[in-house]
Length: 265
Image 1 (cartoon, rainbow, N blue to C red):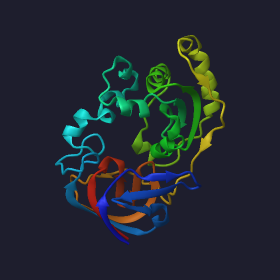
Image 2 (cartoon, rainbow, N blue to C red):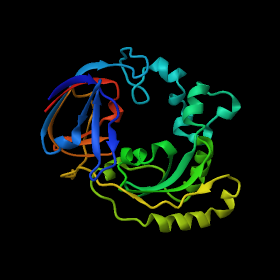
Image 3 (tube, rainbow, N blue to C red):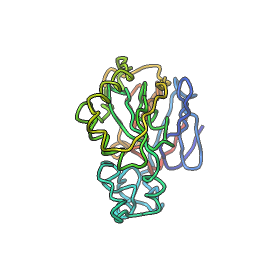
Image 4 (cartoon, one colour):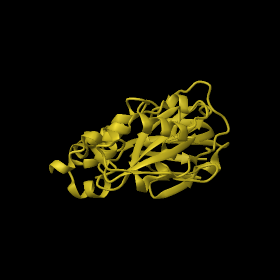
């Protein structure tokens, strides 16, 4: 195998273990089948904006040139802080994009990736969002009508539990088992009064579980950055979240969206 093209976020299939397909240009490579094999990833030094396709010296917001980050709705601050969504104020950068992505049903969930956390995602992104985070288990708990509502509810939950994944801890092994259903009951009771101000539907679906194609977890997590090195060589010993785990270090594929590389193996 020898493929050259720009990197994009890995696509996932919920199997046991999760199947990861790496998108390089127009090619899709089933990387799960390469776990246990030697790979060579070489960076050409070129970064192409994933929106306009123009060459850029630096990648912003996971794959964009600077001008695109200033005009695209998906690069606005409210994407990182959904509770600040301003679509209803008529100031969305791209109203059509907002209608398609933010004004759709969203799910508030609990997950166990590096420990207990709360998060939100579009209903259409279930269960992709959890595999992207490297969660070992996830439990959808509430469904709401849009991103803003989900963000405001998430803020309430964040008073009690974390909303971030410790990626280094996630890559060191399987987290301790957590009873997500029990936590849901505790949190819903604790937030009973505050949740009365929101319109939502409680979800009673069963918990999701995920197994990842990992033969070996690193004792010490050291990451590769293509802005500092132009070659990654080693045995692929696992894949989890959006990380390739080599016996020489880990590589965040999503963070290198738009980087032109050649993959050999």
